[in-house]
Image (cartoon, rainbow, N blue to C red; front, side, top):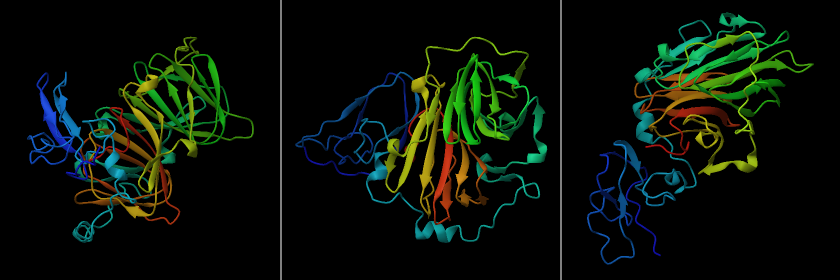
Length: 355
């Protein structure tokens, strides 16, 4: 079969009505992109019927290389050897932007456009509950609509038991080795691992011998204003989801031009329509783009800048980024060794999808 014409490098954002028929152009010739106008006649291509049960915004493939027609699956990122970088014009237009400082001396938020922000943890402001020190980093009061993110450190002592009733929990181990007990079942954990906790379960965290503290991020969906602290560990582990630890594994990386990502946790294991992934970014500045999801990002290594329409902020290892849905942004890595990050977004999908 011949190759389709690439109508555009990025998907088209469209609004579809429920139970109405649409026809997606597969050949790339239509002047009504992404919809068919009959230009396929005489070719081997046929339009694809679209009918959705829920009306709303959707991203339809415009590069015509999706493996999930008619929906964008991120294939446009692999049309070139390099991920799309900021153009000369985009760089020149933003050259005047000064760095937005944190609202604390060395910690706090750098607030950018549209409610987007970069936040540096204030360790002195951690709250203590038993052997756990924690801080709410992203929540409803910060402008988030779907996700909550907490930073947590667990030290020696009797393990505190916490729960977020009704919320699926995606944990990522930043540093230290330890034991995470989920509703009575214990798991040994180490850095670079994701861990899933169900909406009816509770958990505790304690470092192993020789480890002073174990450091984690905890992202929730739906949101929770604060943890619920329990007197004892319940015995209600959900055996239907027996695998809980998902380790970073270079062999499982997905290619996105000269970038890589690995999905650790998503809705296929019951994670309430959210996705947790680890991404790798080379020294570069991405072109400004949007996502249809709300996202949290924690920088694991590498430094750079987060850009929005009219602002930028420095990012360093340990910094946490909040990106509202549809917010224009660009992440720049200025480190020769590249940047690594862990992200969680709602609703679930592929980290490669952008527009």
